[in-house]
Length: 85
Image (cartoon, rainbow, N blue to C red):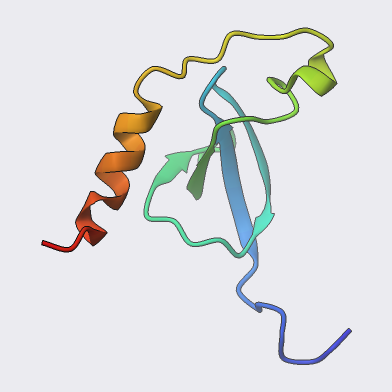
């Protein structure tokens, strides 16, 4: 591997699938401002994801209804601050 191109701030992070409230812990260097108290009683950074292996049709073998209402509004709110006035 090349030296100096990989992040060195890996830490334990909780990923939460927002479509079914499934959560799992893994190492990550992704930045987040949210935290969650995990099963062991410690507080960890939280990263919210839309789809995980518990909700993706490829892994579940069935299509699940994912609440898509409001996604466009969420997108617009998130990127509205970059709109030039």
